[in-house]
Length: 270
Image 1 (cartoon, one colour):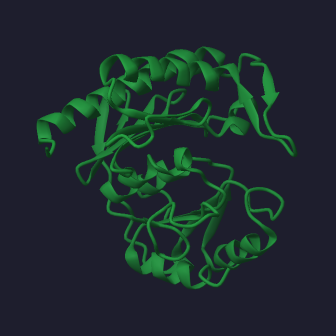
Image 2: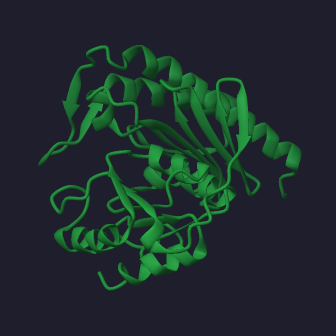
């Protein structure tokens, strides 16, 4: 049975509850000397108590409120992953920023139906900023103030403000991907780095024009899709397909279709 707009309102309100619950776990631990655990066998992939406790309380809320819904989370894996409705959780996207005291980390929450994101939340608790994308509309809330988001009208790469989390070929990009991103960045007006998921919120506000990433997993990008599309932007993989259609987790989000296509020309052959 199709969900009505009233049902969607219920889900949006619940997504906000999940974001509030995560704030209760992350904010007290931010800039408070959280213990860092490296969960990577090679390299550095940090996790903190904030990541784990935030996801734990979110899972408890989902299970109590929507017991038939699936959950896919970064820290504790999948439950009922084949369910019609499932929540995709990244309690602290940008844990490296979190452990460095930089407020570019965010809590990401998505609700998917048949594995298609229909609601997305980007929440930055320290700055009290939240983006909610749903029903082809994205709103930005800072404290009590609320604004409807609209991406910029930048259509040319030479005028664009571009961002990625780590531009090196030893980070999230392979050396070939780093070279391709470098070609885009060198053609753009401004390039800024290390903004994590916060960059996509800035894109939705019209403050950035292009964000390019690789090595993202579903919990990293599911929430971004409704936020970017609801603000009028375009988000795909590097082949112009839906995010997640490749095995490298490559994402490009752009303010306009024209800018998206120009940047894709420099990325498609990688």
